[in-house]
Length: 149
Image 1: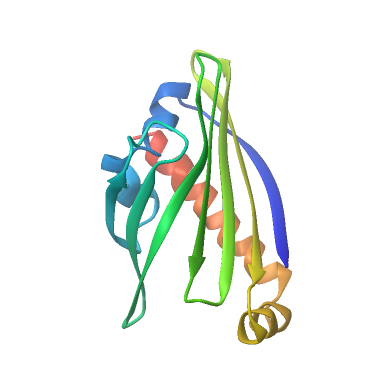
Image 2 (image 1 turned 90 degrees about the vertical axis):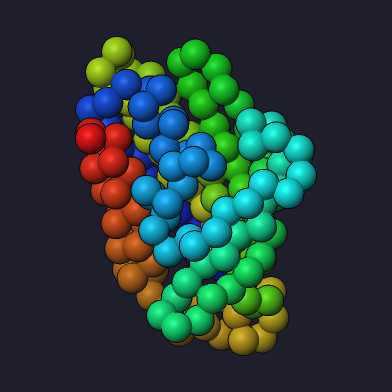
């Protein structure tokens, strides 16, 4: 299993950062997601389900994303999602934003990736924590970049 928890300060208001995690903006921070369609409940509540299509090279994976936690308070906001990718990886991600002041927001990105079968577990063991953290940091940098626009 891979797990991470990283934190950064983004020089943008909390609402602007949080808006990047809305359905209409998901492609700005997750450009490999080709489709993100709400299929159950509302996007702003726990229990929401989305059908998502993700492209990796020539391959497109389709899976269901479950929203486990959705909190939208004035000074802190959090969304936790869960999905199984390629029948091999069980992924849980949490995006938390906390108001520092009117122009700065703390962004906390945490998650875990577990192999659900032999192939998934083997691939995670063969992969490096360093490479995984590079992907995490690239995602956080993209969120920062998009929030500053």
